Amino acid sequence: MAETFDFVIHGGTVVTTSGPVQTSVAVRSGKVARIGDIAPAAAGRSFDAKGLTVLPGVIDEQVHFREPGPVHKEDLESGTRGAVLGGVTAVFEMPNTDPPTTTASALADKVKRAAGRSWTDFAFYVGASPENADDLKDLEREPACCGIKMFMGSSTGTLLVADDENVARVLASGTRRVTVHSEDDMRLQERNAMVRDGADVSMHAEWRDVETAVRSTKRLLALARKAGRRVHVLHVSTAEEMAILGENKDIATVEVLPQHLTLAAPECYQRLGTLAQMNPPIREARHRDALWRAIDEGIVDCVGSDHAPHTLEEKARPYPRSPSGLTGVQTLLPLLLDHHAAGRLTLARLVDLTSAGPCRIFNVAGKGRIAVGYDGDFTVVDLKAKRTITNSWIASRAGWTAFDGMAVTGWPKATIIRGNVVMCDDELQGAPAGAPVRFQETL
Image 1: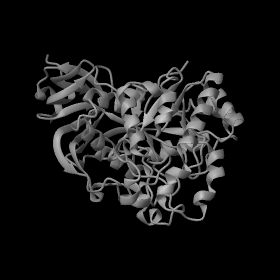
Image 2 (image 1 turned 180 degrees about the vertical axis):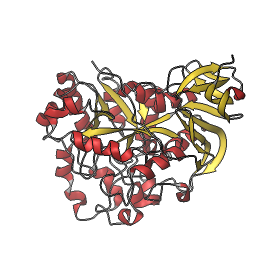
Image 3 (image 1 turned 90 degrees about the vertical axis):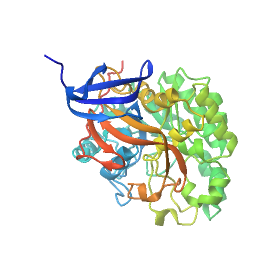
Image 4 (image 1 turned 90 degrees about the horizontal axis):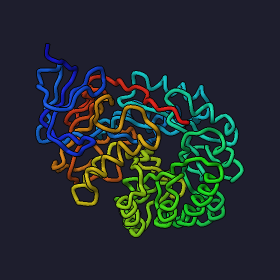
């Protein structure tokens, strides 16, 4: 009797662990069951990927979807809708909501809210605070928890762990990698007078300067080494930090953002104003160049979007009353595909940064590669498609992107999660059916 499957992708170039190969992939019960010559008729459903490239499902390990809280600018449904339109199959959502995700009950509430509403698979960070530092070892093992998030510098929301004593307490509680927003809050407060009464938005990168980032990251690494705790440093934006992090890869993994890889000061502030305002800031081109070198040298472990939406009305407030944050989950992959087309990023490195990398960092179970036994998550792309990113394409409730009007080469054509097509040719398919991401136990 012929072997049967639930779903088959055929006719495309599949990026397997051995490299790109013209082959078919079959899925049964949500998992890859076979890679090789498979007739489309062997499955109840099939997808013709002729002329397209099939990547492992893209994972965005840093998004802010604002729910519970200011859902007028985003919620779990709209945020994950944008994610799948951009080719993303799973997201890790941040804890600086209102109320913040600092307890088991708050985490369980988010999981409940995501059920039946999330288009992608999902997991949530628990936010570290001085009040819950001693409880983190238990909270990090709650279902659908991807790990602990610590803000060493004040940003959107109220979560903050600024001093060495409490940073050390967070690092001493638990075993999973601690994810960190690394800016030195004491220096931010000392320098706040330069912008507090109003300034040009280009001063954002002067207030939150290189030393603010470097000082925090040096403190973090020293405390992490003393505690024997691994850390994941988010949205690294400076050349100086990359040099330091390259010497500490035994305890530190590194994320960069497409915003910092694509834009540069002062041009971005002259053109976009407060739409380019984010934490840490977009900096001069020398820092952008250093981030690309760090990708080439293997210092960078993953690329996330730091999707942090605010409405245009909110962003139009005079600086510094304008909030920091850009939309990004939907443009993450198109921007990286464009960098690939321009020769700045190999396809193998793109896959490592967006799927295998996040899985290594967070000990994700069953995702991150196209291999038998792994989840049937695929991001199907057209590497040659020429498109223009527009505000009208953005699904976020905020309704805008800093990359409006940017022509790109490379585009997500389909998003497939556990063998189910949820996006095809810029159109949603079916209903939201995202499930919690699973994690391997950490010793």
